[in-house]
Image (tube, rainbow, N blue to C red; front, side, top):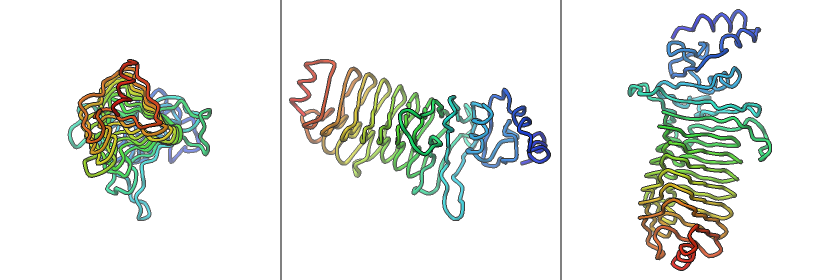
Length: 334
């Protein structure tokens, strides 16, 4: 693909002049990336796309371009005989939101996909570009995904110290773990779908999942102990809307599994038709875990242990229900 003249002039002839780059990208709406692109392009059209998504993200942050359009499938490249994960580093001083999206109504060969042929690596790591993470030094910067699929990795999306939003038609599928939340990270599920992974979401190390819509479905199977959402190590899951359904485990907690000092709060949405071979088809809360139900529905789940197939509350776990009668009822039959 031919290098765009405007970018060639800047990069080769006057690359020392940062003002040329500022002028080139000023007030531009979006950048383009596709597998047969070229990082010597300007990335400003479908005819002159970048090849590398990380390169496009760096340009977007530096020159305030807030949308990146991915065309077709991008595979993690082989570097020095090893596979390299897509890695997005957000700078601590970046406080805006970048949308990474495929084309709407794209033809089959132009649908946006991030993938790897090696199940031993993550497809995408998103992290805050600093050494030490605390609650006080996290950036307001966010990445939103729409119309794109992340698939076939050890972890589909690994987030550390920043916020990622899965919007409309963002799909995480066919990974060992769909999403891993680490180090004060936040995932906002806002219309996206996490499906057909061994485990949908793992929340640890003070990570937070906020579910505003979308679905977590068809994860796990009756042969493994993975399934839907697992919360541990200070993790927090707040569910406001959406659907958790048809997840399966060979053990406990097919829909939501709360372990140790961790919290699940459901305010809306529905958890239904999940199947556990042991206890807690919908939700299980182990000792020291915290569960609050202020709204939403947890119904029609299946489990082989416990009188209540939907919710299992272990001794020393903390549970609160908006309806006091229901609070006493659950404790009596778990």
